[in-house]
Length: 202
Image (cartoon, rainbow, N blue to C red; front, side):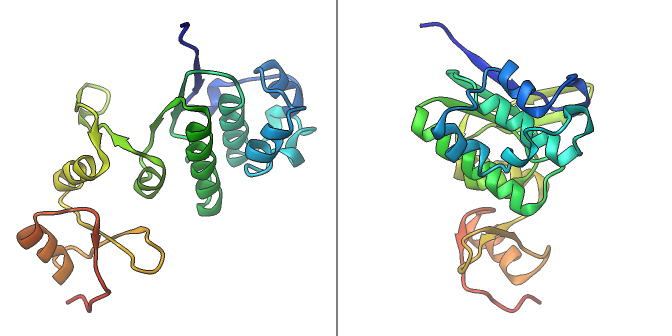
């Protein structure tokens, strides 16, 4: 079988197009007439109101959403999204994460997300690779790990601990030196995935 890769670049300024968003998406291979794509991609990312906007006049957040839609709207075996959460507010990041997670599952494809937003990674990922090194000079990548091991590795290197909020189920960073921070590091030896009732941090 032929490997088909769909890529969303990190640097938005590298993408230039003379025309409308509608024209850009069509030229990118997105079937705008597909009711499935309209419901599962364009509507959640709020692309439809932008279709007749001039591509070059989009804001950073608008351009990011359009490029994510272009990448996910193509047929591929592997999707590579480089920092898809940049320039997006919290609500938009959650929308992108939900779309990525849903479409990956429905298509049975592989999606590789390069991202610094730990909450987004926590929500949409099943496997994690941790990169170490000096930016612009050298670096190494770990083997793929399950989320618990990968996040423990990453947070351990950063000296941080996360707990799972009992109400929202989202990860929350513990105050360094707090009771939960010390308990997770010294007793549980866990930096991640601890479900705990809120305790007074001292």
